[in-house]
Image (cartoon, rainbow, N blue to C red; front, side):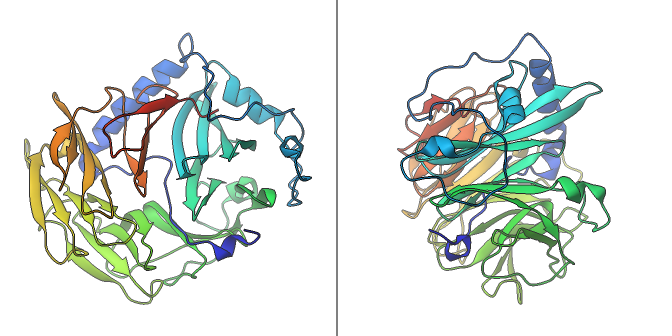
Length: 391
């Protein structure tokens, strides 16, 4: 497609947003990642069929002109980004797929003083390019059947000097697209062509113009896991600063919001919505002041009208709900007994020991390797898995 705004939008965040009670666990993982990156090196590069060959290096031009027909090597590749991505000390920290052959990954490299540099790889049906090196982390997003790499500013204040380095890179059938990201005032409504992303602050990105703005929802302080179904409804987990979280949704781009309680009095929560919006898998957070509390893994097959509890687990280790149009879903449990729970589908599977999280597009499920540089994918709802290194 020649115009990004003709696509339907859905976000896939770089890293699955975590519940409030899992912050300590996330800190442990970050320490492990830091140790891995500053050690002797990371997992050796392997040759994977789905990856395109490394293209001849060139300078990033910022052009939106399409490549000459039949010459994908004309798409520019940034030398500094290539050096970071292939450095033995660098590590992959996230991936987003739009289709099984269209994906974008984020790589980071340790710098002196416990700072980091970031770059991104975009691959589209065998054509590959990179996003330039930045100090601010990239998010990779699904936008219809395309992917974007987005390096955002440190804050949403218009006076923040890091806006000058904010950039958006895409790879479409028209070639490589690179645009500066532009500030706009906060809003309560967003456009039909906007894509939502959130990890606390809810933001709306217009891929056509590069405009990024904060979206405020009355009655909540924080937002997580925005996702859009094929009816156009946007879903997310909304929470107050107290932590109590509910499912919120809008059918009119933020003019009005409805909400449903995940579980009364519980903090945070996680949400998976099927493409058609009918199947929902929800994980409430823990109750404030409790230890050893178990939470219900909940399934709805009628857009949240009715719920069934399919399992109860420790919330610290229960994550990554995804839902499918056939009335089933998945959730990852990483306790002493690792399980790939299957709401609506029967007995649990045993997941790969190094699977760090789950995201899905239709029936295609994927996640990043925990403390490794490979993506892990499944085309049979989690029964079998394949690995590849998304460089």
